[in-house]
Amino acid sequence: MLHSELLAQIPLFDTLAAEDLEALANRMTERKFQAGTRVFDKGDTGSSMYVVLSGAVQIFLPGAENEPRVVLKDARTGEYFGELSLFDDKPRSASVEATVDTTLLELTREEFGDHLSKSKNAAMTILAEMAERLRETNAMLSQRAARDVVKEFEENLTWGQRLADKVAELNGSWSFILFLLALTAAWSAANQWLPKPFDEYPYQFYNLALAILVALQGPLIVMSQNRQTMKDRATAETDFRVNLKNEVGIEGLLREVGALRAETTKRLEVLERMMRSDRLRAEIPAKKPGGPLGPS
Picture 1 (cartoon, rainbow, N blue to C red):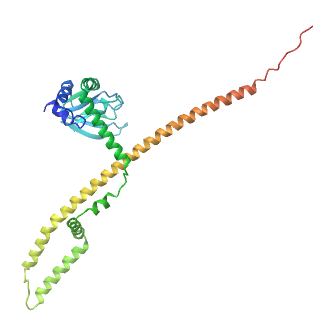
Picture 2: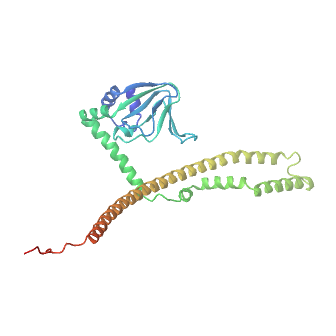
């Protein structure tokens, strides 16, 4: 796969023109890493992004002493990481290690900035993409995150979907088992004791009815399970939004508490200096005007 095609798969660059993708691809450098080699460590200063050309890397949080690492993601061919380092020089938030012999494409901040300075269209496209991401984030943070998604999901179900859920709910109950047992016993007794049985042993009509029932139960249960999977996915997305808003709120509170602590410390230092000055003035007696008269 061409380097420009790999770049086109990255959301940050997928709206760039073909000539800009080709120019950025030519600025990328191939770097090879053997299995077990660290690409970078958590806390390192970031200055470039990487695209996996071949092989695989593991993105993880290193554990403390005698504690296992926390694996965040396994990136394979065509995937990327470290793209935020193109815009700031903050430390890396995780470590990356090659799990097999791997070739990465590296795009440095200097090369990226140099291309943007020469291509107005590329710069505007990147700014538009970043603005769209910021707008989506603001919209997500401004709206109410906690919602009863299961209730909303169930309110939009069709009658067929509701029927499938009811059938799946009934099939997984003792009521359905007892009903089948009672129906089987009644069917057998009726055909045994009636003068003119309507379905003699081996009860072919009853077996046909049971076969049709089983054939219908399978698709209905699978449909209900698929909807349950969709409900679980919607619930997980809502939990993610709630956790994200809570995290942003906590970070804001921490900043405010930090600012309050700094302001309080500053004022306490001023008060301490004032009290120290007052104490020194009280300990040193005031000098009276004039002095002893000398001999005349």
